[in-house]
Length: 612
Ligand code: DMJ
Image 1 (cartoon, rainbow, N blue to C red):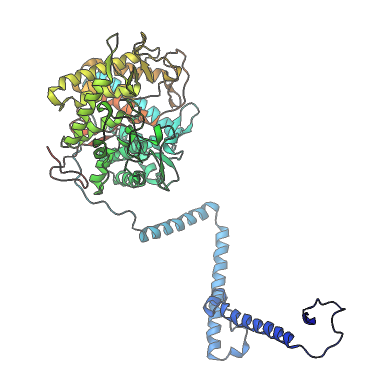
Image 2 (cartoon, rainbow, N blue to C red):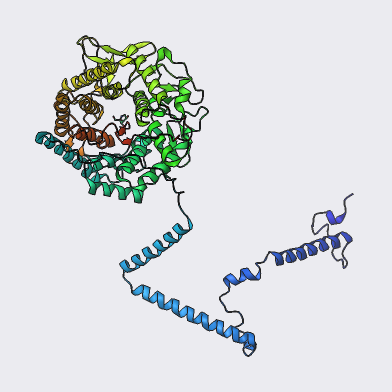
């Protein structure tokens, strides 16, 4: 049976009149009362304490109590009140004055305040750690180089004028953007820079401006870098491209001008790239997010692989950074040395997780090119002490000559591409740089083969010149074939473009320095004239989509490497040899000159002791 107290409170079931409470009812009442008391007690503790009160205290305390007036506390309160009144009046006065000021005056005041805050912050934050002092490498032949022959000087002046046009147009229409759209007359970018405005053209062009004596323009670029170049941005960039264009460009600008800001920026950027090396093998990802440090590879690369020409083109810049900062960096070369190579060739793809090769595709053009270049240049940059680099280069070139280099039916020497045991008889514009590389590596090659490699360089230069000469515009296509009666001409429509690339002119310059054969200046001048005639527009220089068409359409991009490389190599081709002498300077793959490091007995952290 249930008790009435637990029954529903209906009129029917409830006793009409009762004067006393039942025990259970008394108990419930007591419970409610005690809960109420606990709440009040608790609230007392949770109320803000007196000191917190004071924050909201407008100083009115005590003033309203006349009884305090004649006491000591009352005096104090009066003084306090007067002070508050005076403060209020002053604030009111200041506000009135502010309102009387013009917009410009107010803005100037705000700016002064801001600057003060920034100054205070700077004082509190000592900024990046100063770098350890190191002796500045010998820096020679960084300016002048005026040729004695008036006609050569005229050509050189023309190249300088072209650089002015490219730079001024970018300055006017694309300033701060990575590149320029010379027809649309606005900024441009590609995914290698992560679509953030990093001023790639500024950084890439600086050393060319310096070498050409365009010092006003150089200063302008320096100012932009000091004030705007920030690597803390949320941008996923190509590690390779950022290394060769930005780190290379900044280091070269530092060595040429001696301005510390370039060195600091280079070091800051390198730190942002380092997370890309966090892979099981230490082979870096192709891309890294500068802010989060998350890395990944290109979706199109064979089986999640990293690219030989990308991870193999970091050595020169990082050796310099090691020299300047005292931090050990990386040893990709050692890992590669332990790996088996099909036919002695380096495939273009390597998986950074497994440490295994991807597709067996070897090329001296795109995807492979600068890996070989950096082996040779590591040796040169070490004052010829890095014999491991030299040996690796010699072995690699020997295998390339055996498997990839052939003569066409028409007698043109070309470098093909090796794909799964088959030679594709096609050569890319990018591979044309190898003519210069063979010439540069001739001295110091094994078995007295210096003459052979210089000759090989000359043959590649000749073939690449033919690829230009056989077009309507006298500009080279992106790729050309040596098959079915074809000799150095492009077949596919999507291989007929010219995007202001430097490789052929680069080879002419090296060949000129080593042989002084006038044909190289002649060929370089042909290319310069063709660029000026067909690629120049009022807003800069543009690539063209078909070099076999007399009426070409533009791609509307002024590539940053046009300022860094193409125009620099042309300028050097028409300068005397004492400008940037090759005994003292080594050009990175983006044509940024780095001085030879004469380390003597110094051993860089993380590297083997230097051997001669
Ligand atoms: C440049 O960025 C560098 O020369 C790189 O090594 C390959 N290609 C471009 C120019 O063609």
